[in-house]
Length: 98
Image 1: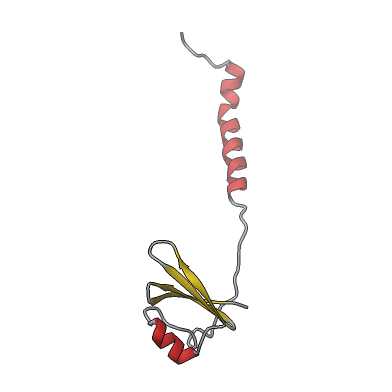
Image 2: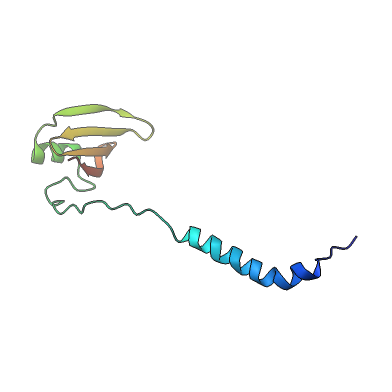
């Protein structure tokens, strides 16, 4: 069984393909952009690798200590303006809240 394109359609095929390609390219060019404000004051936050004892000695007692969850255990301490995430006893991440 062979497939044949009608002569009229065959002459318009390049134009149809070009229209499809250009039409789909215009959809791909549209995108949303998410902008987040830059945080400039990261110097006054616990650094990665600090121990729980050092964080508490430097920043004081947290306003809230959430229990460890998961494996490895992840603990979260809340301070005014930021939260500290620990894996076992070491800081893995500090998040500014604001």
